[in-house]
Length: 229
Ligand code: ABF
View 1 (cartoon, rainbow, N blue to C red):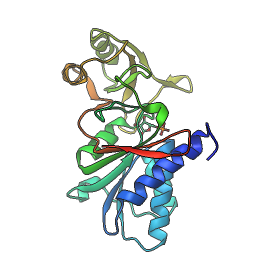
View 2 (view 1 turned 180 degrees about the vertical axis):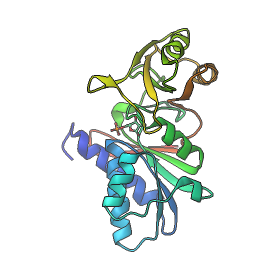
View 3 (view 1 turned 120 degrees about the vertical axis):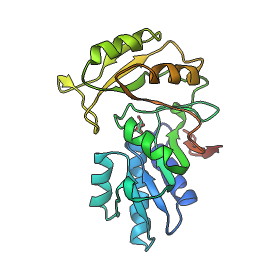
């Protein structure tokens, strides 16, 4: 791996996570994003080798990639639980609390994570932070009806909410909702903030994933891959 090759770092983290955690016969959650993509492709290789895996997708995009590559995708409603999910993140703190959702799939990602026994996060070292919110905005998925009022409620929590746009129109999630990217100076009390955001009428889900990840597989610029647990 050459230094500063972000694609190689994502691939290294994703492949290590799949090789370590995915076993024959499991039900596997497939994440969304450019790092999770490499995990999906590695799972596809295992399927070609004869592994019998059932997979649950965290987005329509992921489902399409999985099916195109020969992976059996099942409805989350048809499984009792998911053994392991391998997904990306936007920020990871030392306690494995996360910000997710810059990829726009946070609602399904959180439903899948909540149904998962072992949530494994794959990232490169640029995503590791001392405190959540220092680098990225916190995505919050909101109902389209009354979204300006909902954004006002978010602003009262101390952030600058910006409606996510795509092609000149508001971005619409797989769930048919809008997303506000909320820039906080820093998130000192993530559990408190999550509770406060969850009580705002119109909020569908927020991108704080607290106490959900069991491990993070982290690729570094020097070519090494380490694990946080
Ligand atoms: C998903 O993809 C998200 O939760 C997160 O927003 C994003 C990370 O993408 P990437 O790996 O492309 O940086 O996992």
